[in-house]
Image (cartoon, rainbow, N blue to C red; front, side, top):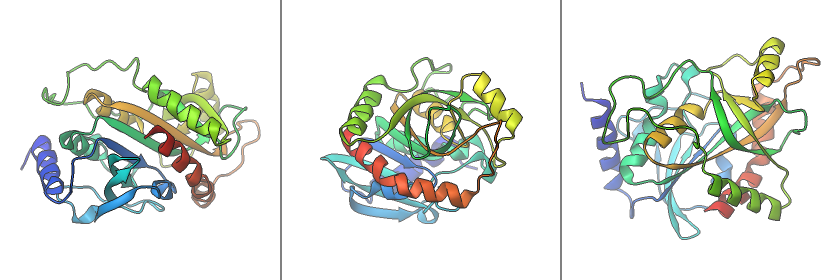
Length: 270
């Protein structure tokens, strides 16, 4: 069986042979947010299932396409849909696209997700710039033998999210009149949504938004030396004292409506 590193290299070589120029920036969109990539001048696209060794998304509102193109003069690789631990994928599977991006030469990674708001000042539709995260998945993509060529054994995570990119995002949002927030994202494994007791716990430990993605990808990206920007669309508000049921359909609906906001912010950053 081929090693994880070997598979990532083979996938990158397959893609590199079919694109015009290697990408500088990677963009990864979350649930219902695929339309935030509308400003990219797409040169070529691939269905995930057609890419060697690539996982396949099984989640509603994750299109499953890999795009290569140009945005504001920068060469981009963009994912319409990601992979989650709750789908049964391992941390290595979830972060495989990040390693492929690294092999292609990507230096900046922009991630978006749909998240539940925990901060009472947040409103549905707000965009939260992730300033830090709490990994509560019980998993880490760096467990196992370290690939020294990708990064060091014990990467520092004290500045996982790039402050300069965050400032660019904040400025782009402010100029467009978008309600922006900053906060700490808690990453859970899912797929069951949070109980009121879990919401109280998350708020107590400092989380301001919660979701089922992003942290694994950020860990791998930081390990690989990438600068990272994380953006959460607040799709619902979690109030443990007045719990309201949330459905995936409602979450997708809010995320899809917020996609143009994300598009504006991403354009301002790139």
